[in-house]
Image 1 (cartoon, rainbow, N blue to C red):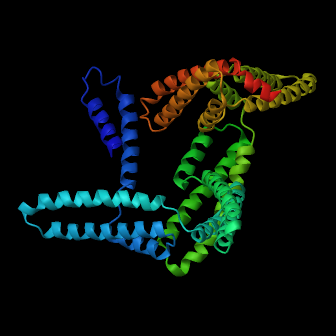
Image 2: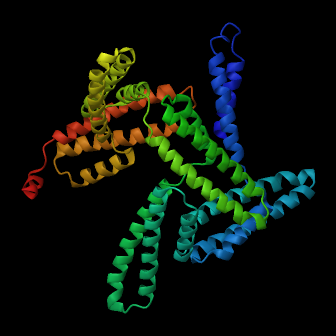
Length: 440
């Protein structure tokens, strides 16, 4: 709601600008209006459900819940939801002088309900519930990556369940070893759950927008055909999902089976479109963009090399179009060699791609914990501070207004360059003698 208010204020400010300035800010106004529409849709999606529907949902969750902590929180949530319902009823029947006091009470109860609902959401579910949820997700999974991640998660969850069962019946001398095993199994399950969550498909509306954007940029005929097919299937998925929501209970099973079939076909076609070669001009544009955002000297050198070969491929393709029959064979041989060199250079450039900022922060923390040399510790502390700043700016950029994105992107690049410089400095910093002895 705060974002929506900020966007609305920006649109109002642009609308009330001086008449002589209006021509210059027409584009800005159009961008601001688009952003306001997007934010308004997001705000509408976060609107709470009617209280009666929420009470029914809480009751259903409470019936399934097995974990004592979760059950206690759900009971508290149900009690507060009923209180909100009673206050809403009282507000409708209240006189003008009583309304203010009831409204204040209602707001307080609603805030408490939101807090408890968040806690109940975070509360751990019983292992049998987790296993049932993973099995359900596995049944509906379409992409091979997600299926593999869910299978790993299911295996880890079953191991946790088996260890919990063994712990109940264990003798006092076996308990310490089993507890250790259970702790390790839980950490593996947590890691597997994160992997499975990252493999979760995007909402179908977003996927349709992404495919449309890719199709608008695509130049290669093979890639265009694959993207068109993917778009057609994505639209079919959206239609089937809508049908499923409005369907009768007797029709749901058939629609679910049909939907899963179409989703699997969409995954296959999307993978095919991903593998389809991009037009050389698109490759050149992508390399230029990557070079603009690259900060490490190693990555810059690799990207420059790849860009050089890409330009060579483009020049040879152009030459092949206008070549005489006698020259074509020699140009084709050169083009093959250039394509091979480009592929090799692209692989090298991909290998120099920086790690995700979260992993970088974890690695820096681990290095800082081990570091003993004061100069090295100071450099690592600085690097950690900059890495956290990069993470914050990336988050800001993802939620930024389109008119603010350019400024934030420039700031982010500056901080990333400083981070790369500091990491190199930390690498060159002398290690403590005890560390050197340990390595020897």
